[in-house]
Image (cartoon, rainbow, N blue to C red; front, top):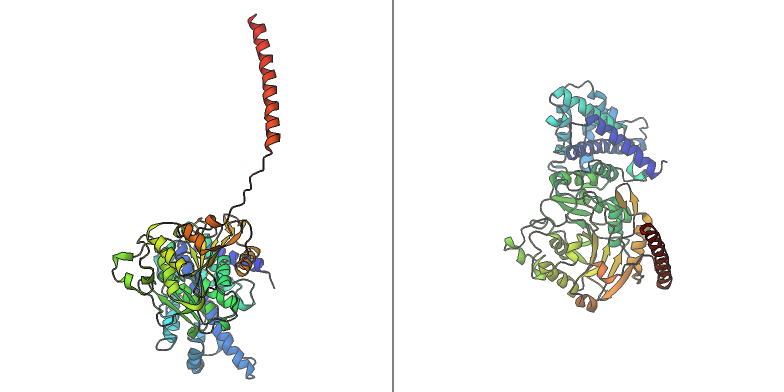
Amino acid sequence: MANGNQEREELHRAIWAIADDLRGSVDGWDFKAYVLGIMFYRYISENLAAYIDNGEQKAGNSDFSYASISDEMAENAREDMINTKGFFILPSELFCNLRKRAKDDENLNVTLETILKHIEDSAKGTQSEKNFSGLFEDIDVNSNKLGKTVAERNEKLVKLLDGIAAMELGDYKNHNIDTFGDAYEFLMSMYASNAGKSGGEFFTPQEVSELLTRIAVVGKKEVNKVYDPACGSGSLLLKSAKILGKDHVRNGFFGQEINPTTFNLCRINMFLHDIDYDKFDIAYGDTLINPQHWDDEPFEVIVSNPPYSIKWKGDDDPILINDERFSPAGVLAPKSKADLAFIMHSLAWLATNGTAAIVCFPGIMYRGGAEKKIRKYLVDNNYVDCIIQLPDNLFFGTSIATCIMVLRKSKTDNTILFIDASNEFEKVTNNNKLTLENIEKIVNEFTSREDVEYFSRSVPYSEIQENDFNLSVSTYVEKEDKREVVDIVKLNAEIKEIVAREQILRDEIDKIIAEIEG
């Protein structure tokens, strides 16, 4: 089997080839939705067909191929497939069969739109309806961005279908890379000018997801459920499935996302990772103002990379100070910086035996005012377990060195562990990247909690109080002075020698001048 880097390079080449074909007509954000949406259509087509084929072959029907049978015959399987998979696709509407006919279909745009609508409609009135509703709305096959005429649009759609068919996706479980996540990350980096912040979204690189999740599940082999209040495309939620095994997340994966395109991509991502429709609940909307999972909290694992320093209603909304998520601190996060509102929300929904690991903007660790009062509340009540300083330039869209705040409700002492991981990276092109060794080192320190010079230190409550509830890692972990050590005695001797030589030169110059003037 190809190794991870080869697989990644092949995938990136295939995406780049599609981008070349569509260049100039579709911008980065829209392009991402088309590519990932059609990847998803291909995936669920193959997933459904393989499931039915395997069942028939086990029953002794060795030549059976779902893709080859009539739609009428396939209707017999509809109800069973909707109960099992949450959706249904007729053989004629499978990705492979649409692609065969695509070049000769003058109404390809209408055909594709109809098929995608049929997939969504197959879930209507069933348990899986909310997971499929509006799932393909970002794939606008009639958009002028694809071409001015129907013929031009269809030509682009054929190229898109051919490009996605050429991708070697295989069965994601046999891959060394997370194919969909990697395709998404590559698409983000391809459009770096608007990547990371498009639609207010911050994409979390896979290595950061790995670190956050491993910290949140330390010591656990199984958890009740995983939650991300600002879930983006779901990469953090899915890391728990990868690290623990999806069957070890008993009650599933929960998240909320404010950007409609990313919300759709997140649901698509769940299906692509073989998370059954009854094992995830991704909601659309503003988590801080209108949270959608009151009935599902508390959560044993919370992992999140919420948007940094976004505006929110704050104390403009008099009801929010009485909201049970925010009221314990006695003050709301500032209107111009919602960071600590996400922290308070996560803390409120964290199970007593749970861990929350949240990426934070560094300013919230030291600024005064309301933010200091919230920090004081968190420290006084012994909820802050660890603060980790990350390297700069890890994320698309921002070069800022971020931190991780780890929250726990069942701490056994009242110290906070500070880890300075700002040097734990390798440089890759314009970005820094956490390696597996870096991640290992940070997680091992988080587990052992030993003081290591210039790297980590457990700090008692009294010292944090003395420092006015400043939670910046640099306040507690000394930075190693890497400047060259100077030997003063040797330096003085060298200076003395230089001064003596200078005097000799001056004397020589005086002699020459005297001779000239004489």
